[in-house]
Length: 595
Image (tube, rainbow, N blue to C red):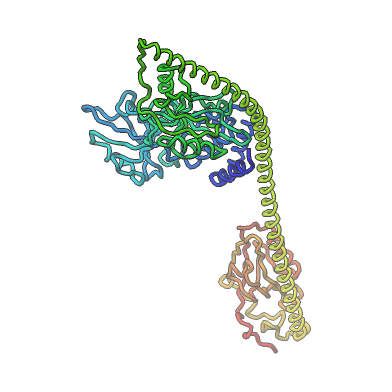
């Protein structure tokens, strides 16, 4: 199999199945088939992946990868491609009986109208309507955009209806009204005989199958075709060489060729059919099995001794061997075969003439027989070579599919690693940025704290000794009985600060035992966007009396800071820290008077 065939298959699958996991399942099903040659198991595996009508055309893309002997079995087990082989069903109501079918779906459900039930023996059943048929037209009206109720109105109350339908082999289902639409395959027994009775001219007896033939590495199909007369038009297989490539693909005498590479053979001229069959190394052929047996049997009953080269073959059909270079005319007889009624001739001269003609025909028949024997021997040798080449190509294709799968896995791993690396880099950058902000903040706090200490030292120097009773920053001498020390219940305020994750209290304290503030613990700074700042209710200069019920009087500054740090660490995010404070009467720095 050519590399381009495998590459085209992988590309087509990638367009229809974007999910990597589903593609892996499809490739795994093909690998299992390569090892087991089990077509039913392959189709079961494919149905698990191709579970939506939009994916049904992949069955045709898989067909070139199926072994020749399995082509027809594969076609019988797989559903039709979407939108192909439309059928016309005409129903006429008899008396008060119903047409005998039910439908489901509609535009409001995001799907078409599908036949969900057909009553056995009803008009619908007798006319060939099948479970799973999608109705595309009703009495000439397109219903693609119709809701369920509109379709029912087109059918109900009518005595005669004409439906145009197609069958996908799938029907939409819902377990509950709120569930999304899913799809279910219809069993073959419930379907119309595969690909039969379409409106394109494939009517009549005979099963229709589709096969793919790869002629690369082979010189010919090893079969001959014949054109039917006006009463039986079409292109038919007249002979299939034993052991030929055609026989390997399941071609049989009497098969009608309906289509080759999407070109119809229903009204094609004989020489054009030969050109089409020889013009490509890859043939997608649609056949109607044994359709021409009545034609060929009738021919043999009339005169089984006739030869394809007999001069009297003017009343026969046009022939050609597909692997021959000869071009046979495409004229066909006016009638199939005339009934020959022989009477005994009294004229001895005429009898001798007939005997001479019979001898000539016998000679031609012997020559034809010898030619066929030589041709069959040559074809047998070619078939052996083609089989060996096909096995090599199949192994090569298997390796290529495996290489593609591995390359795809490596690509996905590389992409995952690249995404993980980029994520780690972003996280590290964020951590570095956060650390830098914390360092800058700590440095700012340290500088502000140092400035406060220097300011306190300056103020302490101005105050002098405690016994001098000179005024302090707060406007009263240390140890004096000023109004600052007179606290009432009305001046005490409770502030509850909610702890947030990774957000510190961010306040600075001053005072304590031995300080110019007479042992009081005072808020010297509240930093922006800290927990205290976000909570509100506390300001610079406020005196903290208690933290979570623990009194701060008679504590040094370091003891108060240690207590506050411990309470903050023990408080979990979402918890609270309760402060009992006395609000400062000095709200602005310009209210401070220095002496």
